[in-house]
Image 1 (cartoon, rainbow, N blue to C red):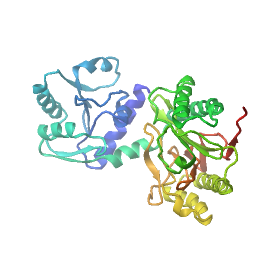
Image 2 (image 1 turned 135 degrees about the horizontal axis):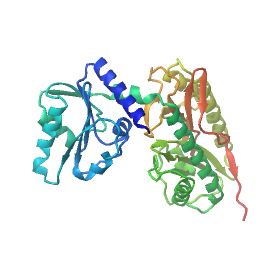
Image 3 (image 1 turned 180 degrees about the vertical axis):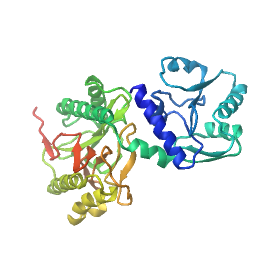
Length: 375
């Protein structure tokens, strides 16, 4: 990420804050703060806040142990450092907000990220501030990806697919979900993923595959099981998120049938994507296939979610989301059918919106592949 990119993003944020009547935005460690600074900090017992005024220079409030991260910045930022003596932390916060000109007005925050720890310091420093959600503003800037962001996500998809291909030979009767998940993690790292994966892989056998967010267990694979694998890679903070479903030997005909319905729903969802349509229309296109097949009650989640610096971000591909899709938006298409106590099928692809359709960043076969074990 170049300093020029950071400056452009900060300028876009300023313009959006002004247009929406905000005095500033306050962001704590996470994908938003990294997006606007190029700096990575993790949540810990010490407060960290980035203040982005609508007018003026951004301000960072940091423990002094983080000073080195600012040593090579090529853009203006005002840093306020505090020591391990907690009695002085509020004074540093007060000075930082004064520098940012924040004594009153509307301060935007991200509700699902800002902790009570940082909130209390902000409220004590400037009691007259109106602290409200800036989620729509931040999301609107991050939803449309630039060329380099898409290139990183494409590479994350390639690495994830290579890792799964290298893992498939280990899937055989008697192995456990945990064993395959751990092997897949190793392959992801071996093929080039950064270690901070978007999530620990979901590996679910047989009845467990009917749980969309299953956690790998010690369940052993048996012939006749569905094998659902949901996994992703990370390249420079940008993620992939893919799901494929396999069959261990011969499976029940109905399970084969629902796999074909899900494949068709996935194709319908991808075909519905283009600039100018709503997120809800994409969900409806995929959902219609499953409903007409008689399995609507077993498609129990939205069709997809935004993807980028987070495994789940906007836009959400839900029947209730009227967001208009724009070129550069990236998200998943992942319809599923889940039959309780029997098994489930999900097929998930990562796509980017183009003017007249979408480009899939994922390319592995979507058909149900039968895994054959030869002793």
